[in-house]
Length: 207
Image: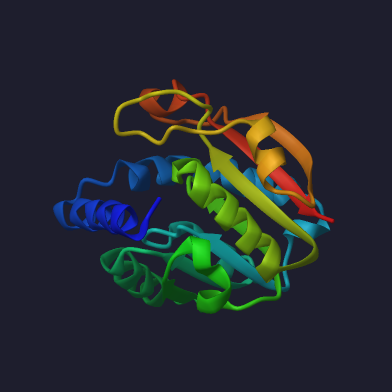
């Protein structure tokens, strides 16, 4: 995706936030219980203390959850209104979290390095093929050896405006130097449209 195309996509997300047309935010709230269960059940590599990144954080619900669990967490998103709402939300919740306006394919210059955990709720699966490689390279660059990545993603398919999704083979092939720890279906209380996309949770660890 060229710079002009990327600008059009970001402009579309900005308009969606201004109009309140953000179904991904609603779906994201629906996975809260499943996310909490996964975080509770994971090994020590997905537990604080340490630096965590919420990639494509939106209005910050999951960033705040990580902060409550003791992570030194940063959320990044490309939409100014989403970032502003996330900051206000964290202040209201009384937690310390950093929110950055930036591009997930240029993470190092926006959020620095040294992360032990990355949370990706619907970020990777919405990127183009070219962006996915750039994003994966950046995730590797900013994380420490042994870091974990927990990703929520739809399975592949054409669904109109919904993300085109991904699968285990693509995730493993794109994140070179990472190994798949688990691949499980989300069986939580999700909207029917989301369930039809066969969402999955991928847990990867960096070598």
